[in-house]
Image (cartoon, rainbow, N blue to C red; front, side, top):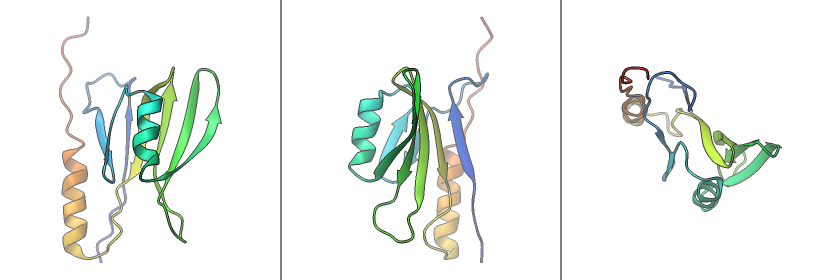
Amino acid sequence: MIRLLGCLVLGSLWTTKVVSQVIVGPVTLTLGESRAAVLKKLGAEYRLDSTTATPESDQWFVWERGGPPCLVAASMGFTGGRLTVISRAWQPAASDKGTVLRAAVRALSQLAVVPAGPAT
């Protein structure tokens, strides 16, 4: 059995330009998107729990609905009301090899790095 487990963390402080979108289930998220828009989109599909909140930043867990087991689909963080970090597991729900391979190809396609231009 092939098992795929990985994690993608996109942060706005990286020195290279990175693809700034990640797909969580049927929802596409973009770094820099407003907290209200992200919570609305994800809230329609998932259960959301705030883990920390300060005036400057807050972090959330995104939970699959249903269960048990209760599975975390992603975690995310906001700074100044904007999405700055997205982390999600790349483990597919099904364990057949075809599903695992398709999930790996999708995950790797989201990891494409675009070279940054000259520093200014």
